[in-house]
Length: 240
Figure 1: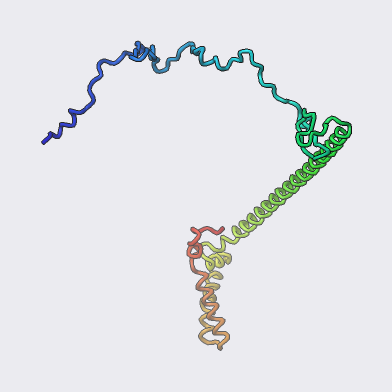
Figure 2 (figure 1 turned 60 degrees about the horizontal axis):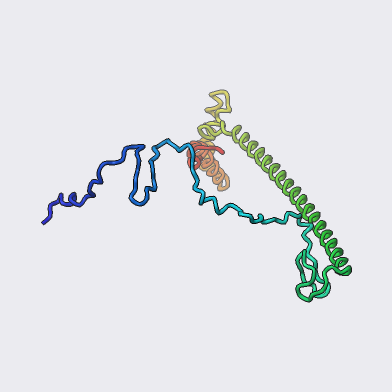
């Protein structure tokens, strides 16, 4: 039975002394590395082997010449016999062998190229008009949206100011806010007595319509003395 410490017997063995920083590192397969650069150090010059740049030399070859002519000059002749497109430097049609340098062929090419240039110019003009029209419509749409946002902001501000003016009447409740408008204390208590006693008198001594009126009036008076924060509890006590 192996000991619980036997796993330590299978650790990697020591490789000997380490090479000090900046010392020489020699490998057994041709001395590939000659030194180790420490952190923050960089060699002053980097030598690139000649074999690495040898393949980029031309060795008498001519560099590839690129065609830099504008697109308008890249005209390809079309054979008037078989309507085959040919290269710009082709002398005879590749399909039927017709001469591409004949006067009739050259005149047809020139007429077709001019018509194509006119068509391209008209297409560019239509595209520019369409783009300008689109930009104008987009600007008008953005201006209309901005005006709508400003009108909506003004309407919201107006509603908020109106609610702000009404808010003192609902603090702490509608009944108290209305009684607060009466400056004299005796008149205020008289109004409160009438507000409470009138529904009772209508319900007690009135006929059927007056009883209903007294009942509705009593419910309104009772609700007017409910604190406002109970009505606005769902919105955190906010008015707007």
